Image 1 (cartoon, rainbow, N blue to C red):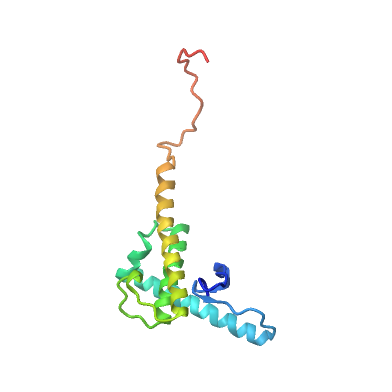
Image 2: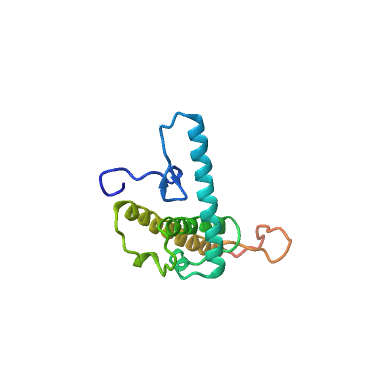
Length: 156
């Protein structure tokens, strides 16, 4: 657990962004079963995230504005799925915001911390999208840009 002297697992080592993946399992049948379970949890989290986004659930606002459709939107949706995995895990039906959630044990506290980190990453995606859109050049015609041959009379 984070904050108790244990290192925080990398995102790739987490199922649905909140559950640590089991390690050191040598039985291939157990590994297969655990992988199937992880895929099921992640699929359910993504489906619940899609529903929450479409419904406009208030807690989704913790994750900032959704980027336009595309790769950033998909990343944003995966961050929202971390929130839905947490809500599903703790059977929270009426979440207004994650900031108001009371933690009662270390497991819940660690998972809530992961959700808050996911929300922060999601908000950063929206900021990154705004920055990239502001800097993008969209040509107004199909003509190629050519260097200007005009002489401005500057001696450099």
